[in-house]
Image (cartoon, rainbow, N blue to C red; front, side, top):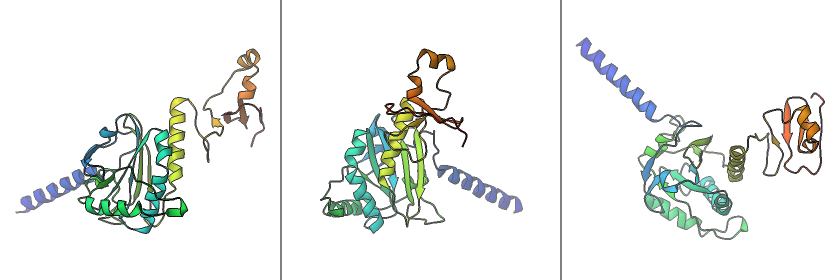
Length: 251
């Protein structure tokens, strides 16, 4: 009898380990998990159906709630900005498709911040069984067992996860930050540069290497107009090199 009990306990523990591994939050650098689901734009397979576009998958706690409504309206007003960056958007919650469609129609009638009404072109994904939410680690049981936290996954054109963020239910997200994040990621992918704190598009960028040698500077004095240092650990490349800056003092 004891042997049977031990066997059952071992099986339960093993199932728990498997279950936990299924719900692991996908990390930066990993392949975006694939799923198929019904949405307000029809059935989709994510991320495959968006091809070689960048993608942002956002979760939210519940339809018709005020913070979530404000977030979707802000996201909708930024659709053209994301389109210019080649980004496709998708939003998921544990609500069903019927409620999604009702909420979408309601939001499209609102004149939020006196900017006029706006069409929501991105799909709202139904997830009543929480399979998608679990797959992406958006359902945090300590917070709620049936409502998502505010999760954001930025995924590149190769379907690799590049950024992961989670926000509490009480705090609405700054949707402009995700535009900035994509701009920064695309810039650092196209050039071997980093972006400093509070970077905005058009700001100078950090070069993670010594940009030129004494010999190179002698051969091309204009390099001094393109790069400058703050102390001897931070080298910057000027986006607009019309004004040269040099600061070699330690800070």
